Length: 379
Image 1 (cartoon, one colour):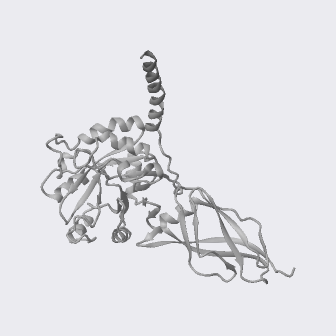
Image 2: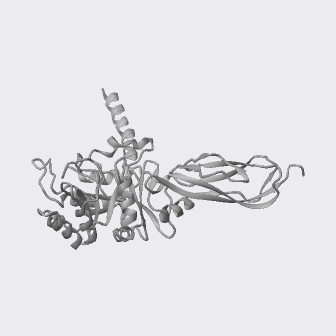
Image 3: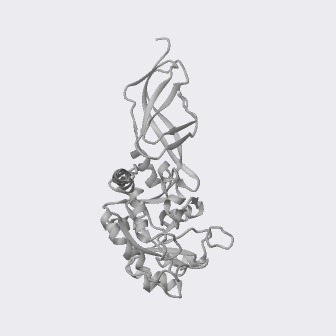
């Protein structure tokens, strides 16, 4: 019996560090930087037991830290409280319970809430607020004005819900809020759903683009995190890793929606992001006749880029499709279209990056500019 107890204690001794190491392991998301700004990974929409979520508030902090995020906002509903018989109603309590854990882990926790009304205006998140309680009023206009008065940033959630026909519609009420400065952004992605109409609204109205998990269950129940799946998140390009830095970036619309292997934004942001993500090595490229040559393109990020040739070019044959695998070097195969080309030429190879959406369902148009020295086959 004594030997068995000793073996049991040894088992516990060796198992605890392994278990603790698993708990304390943080993912590192390798994502592109924007010139002059740091890329912060953010999720501004999630729930706990203080509304209709299924976890205690500090759990949201632990999940976000392990998944490599920099900032989150817990946005429990004001009006929808299905657990109120079990959890005392206090609209600020989820933040109060989570902030200590966030400080311990170095995670930025932004106070927020979800204003939950029928359509119109639907559901809106107010983040960067000071006190949720003044937003708990009958009039949704007064609730949103109270958020603005506190310096809050307000965005329109999942624009097809709770619309009766489940369509994205910009109501006159939304236009009124927009003109009053009470809508500053829109979720162009919520969970796994992309809203092309919202993407266009953000472009037309110069609003920040947001992607959110809107998670209610533990994130591991919704996403296969250990096999590389990630929650939707907003990439914020901030001058500093602080709440004020994130708020300034959102106010200046320096944000991109990231979900699955897609980025949703504007050309002004996605074009430099793509160029900052890749390195092309093709110095002193020489081709004789119609021999094939290979151009190494290194993708330095966790996002695979899916490229489609926009049109054929006169001098070269190029792949109609190519994928630049994440954190890999991919060879772009090219072949002259004639044996008689000679001399140095700058060649532009035009591709569309299909998973970088600069407009609704429209990929980023880009090109690789390559200098090649051609030699005729008979020399």
